[in-house]
Image (cartoon, rainbow, N blue to C red; front, side, top):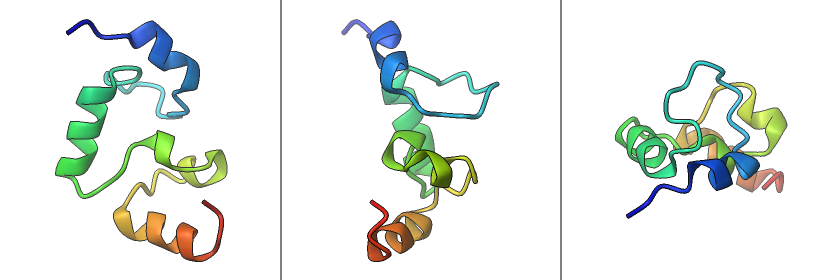
Length: 67
């Protein structure tokens, strides 16, 4: 399977500048799920920039109707 990294970068909102997984969605998702997190693309920009990508943070945002 060919990675569509250039196409993925168009919608990737990850603000962690030195991340080696940026645009490589399969690696990003695998990494974050292993750490009980979701990737940046699951969060609005203001929430993503806190770097709290936990499941719990996502649920709080959903409950507050921010997602």
